Length: 130
Image 1 (cartoon, rainbow, N blue to C red):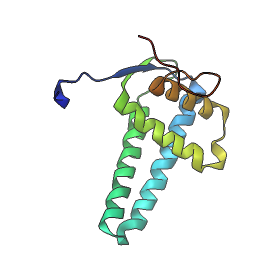
Image 2 (cartoon, rainbow, N blue to C red):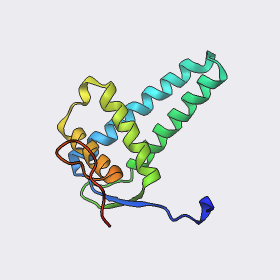
Image 3 (cartoon, rainbow, N blue to C red):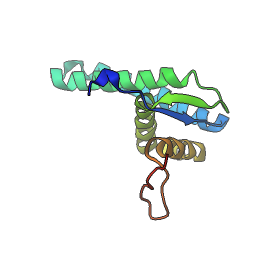
């Protein structure tokens, strides 16, 4: 089957004001950090530089996309657009001592559920029913 004939996978998600502020802050701070890292890798080998360029581009794209979100607004988003946002926010959460806020944790959990399905009490994914 051709890649072009596949329908995109859309997901619905909504964030409250605090969650959205936390996501935007995470994306902005990671974009600034990645830009600084990109400047530092200009002397590195080509492979390391290209890897950092990809990472920086992904972070900037996620930051640009979340700037269109509004608190309380249900968002219909393609899975492939939500995944980079999840990666950036998760990286921020893992890297930042200040990122342990409840709103950011709620947002990460929402994104994870939307991407991967509900999690049962044992911490494993439940099969999604359609």
